[in-house]
Image 1 (spheres, one colour):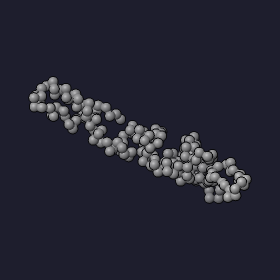
Image 2 (cartoon, helix red, strand yellow):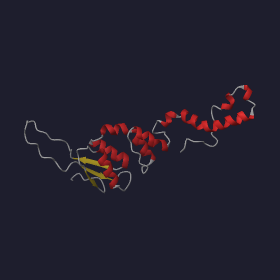
Image 3 (cartoon, helix red, strand yellow):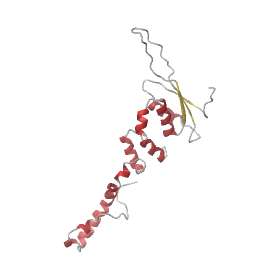
Image 4 (cartoon, one colour):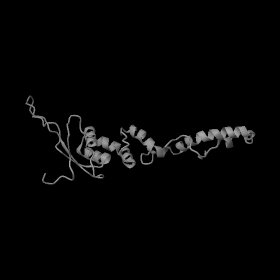
Length: 186
């Protein structure tokens, strides 16, 4: 979509009608101002609809990527438009949940439409005794199990990208792609 000249778009505020009476019958003045009206009509239409441009649910698709950059959402044109809109709407909530199990599960569902389960905490360990030996580190890290949701296929590389982006920096998350929901006995 372009906010340039739109054929047939009339200005709500024609300049020729606002000229002094002396120029009302002047053909040159009316044609000149009509040319300006063609250029200014999309500007006025954009300004009149500015609240819609700032609402991710209503913004034009080409404007959505720029709007998403305001809240730190990387626009992925591979995603359907409605999911991209929802990602911008929920960006602040997901930033607040970043690095948590819930945030990771929500991000995987929103971005890729896959179900996920996170086990293990990848948290820190400490000792209450000063000068004591540090506890051994759990080198495995959290396990993220993912299975299909909206689509029958799971894009493993995009899952790994999303997990890397949403996991805490000090944690190495493992990813396991499952064909369906995990069994209770697992």
